[in-house]
Image (cartoon, rainbow, N blue to C red; front, side):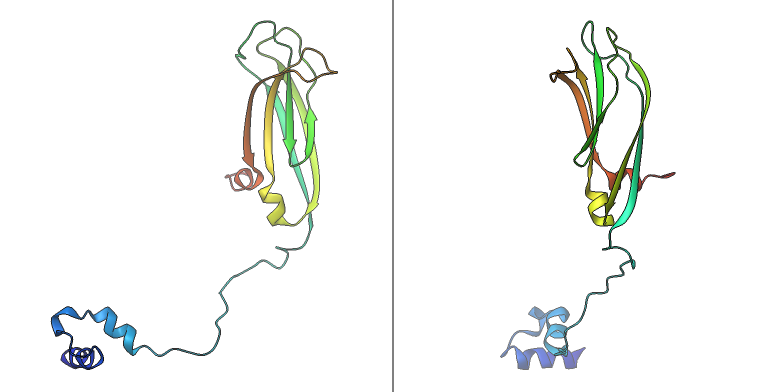
Length: 149
């Protein structure tokens, strides 16, 4: 340790040995390589290539929707694709049990960044958009990483 202190004093132009830390001495005596190092990234062989993905969503029911004489419709969006349930008339607790499938041919990075949006809309009629009751968003990667998926 004394040799390191003397080296630090010599390199530091007379610094007090008590004010020089071992970390600074180590930094001064470290060899620097001229070679560029590549980051150690382990990518799966198909990580960048487009693949077929299928997202399936079942809308079962809604409960205790706010409002009177609701005509609710549930819209499910995955990325830019959108599908909606049938309208249920005059109910705050509609039962749908409707199954939607979304097909994609993209790279995994793009797929897992897609957003799933589920919206409930009070539909006055099917020709014009109704009033948004509520919505929920999450990315496909979050769903995929859950246990059992």
